[in-house]
Image (cartoon, rainbow, N blue to C red):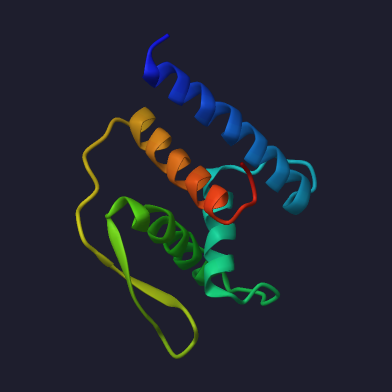
Length: 122
């Protein structure tokens, strides 16, 4: 068995477990997708869990989620919290040009690693 195959299988199992868990916890029935998970990460990182966000904030929350999960990979670095408590990040290295499937794997791996770090999944 190739190492990449087992890595992809492990990712697939962890991703399915994570999405099932988050769907059960945060969604009425519809399976939560990557964008929804990034939104939840953004809300968590902003730390205003019970606040109702404006429509404009949703894109910013997803951006916070993206920066947060890609920070350990060296793409972003946390800079500061603004007066409203929102984290701001600096781009350290442009994301590589990846095919859509490769982008999906990169972000899913980063999300899974985030939730392993937070001890939500193993």
